Image (tube, rainbow, N blue to C red; front, side, top):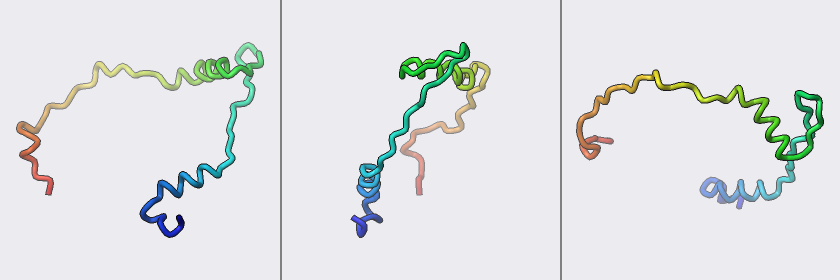
Length: 80
């Protein structure tokens, strides 16, 4: 496997990952009401509630779409 690493990196990294013993878990959380949360779904909900304000969808209705400068067929493009 070591000799083939330059041509077959995928197999090497799959092997390394299979030998990894990493097991990351989210510990119990305390919500805004000072309650201890240990259920996985409740922890997901608490994290969503906490970080949800950071990941919002922006209003993109005011963004202009640029005019197309290409008027033709893609087979007319020279890729060389």
